[in-house]
Image 1 (tube, helix red, strand yellow):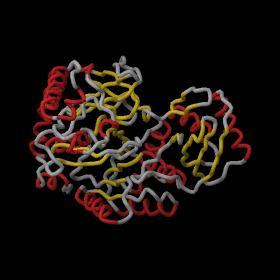
Image 2 (image 1 turned 60 degrees about the vertical axis):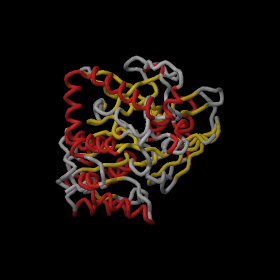
Image 3 (image 1 turned 45 degrees about the vertical axis):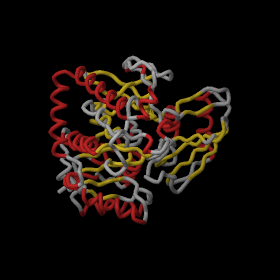
Image 4 (image 1 turned 180 degrees about the horizontal axis):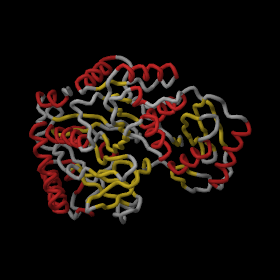
Length: 432
């Protein structure tokens, strides 16, 4: 049994009421989505203008037409939490959390307890809509975890309460993957959930061994990938080697799940709790189907304003059956290669081209690209065998031709790649 809901209920997070309210929100959206969204936008804006000194000062005398409201950035929020909380809220009566820092701009934020309860109710409901019951499905969790100290045991306790077991993703050796396989053979896991890169790496190991995970663990029904990009060829690999449905989850620690659904389809926005806009570099709305900055409004967090909050990612929205869907996620906003002539290349496009070049070379398991200078790139990779000189020259030539620039490319074989403290793999990094 998943004890998380009971634990939350006992500590002041009213999950029972949140589930009932969430159901009411869904009924409203089904009846008239546009009226619901406009009503909730107006309510949360009015609340923070009246009760939050930080936000009302940020808006100032600007018109309160929605499209003229300021776009809230991470830099705006990098100040003491007490400066940003609404009247009546403190660190003692809210859920306080810290962002992952994957954007390079971490900060502490808060949710009022009922908003946090709504988030948990929504997560449970979204999973259930795809046939996954968190109360009964034992989760194989592929996330990072601190190696020692109080934080380590705190995470383990949370896992125990949540009916999940966490695998050590910092060790991607064959020996460790064999332990993974043994664990799946001896436990009745219902689903996998974790960072895309590690799940893909595990799937590649299974492919090498000619193993299908569901054959080893017949109780498996789903795999949920999150936190990192999912490429089409990787999705194909996951479906084949895991033998289950692959779901894609996009969200943030600040807001919860933003979009969710089958990985091969456009992801449905959780419109009950969030409002998402796509804006250009001048903070103007773009047409549906056009790429831009993802800007989120959390419709129920009264403790802390997330109104037109620039989450730091690029994406594309469309509308299906009068409901917004995320049709494309394109990586982080600031991720781009800056070439000597001043040209900017989106990091994801650069990474994808490189992936195409080396996918059949030396049995590459994973790689990262680091831009050290405008004309200098380093490719660190993990593979069973080292690139030959001819293969390295092929990679260098292909990148130079594609980018139409004279570049220095250094290629290094590694036993493993550096990940963040939480286990995320930063696929592209610019160091200047």
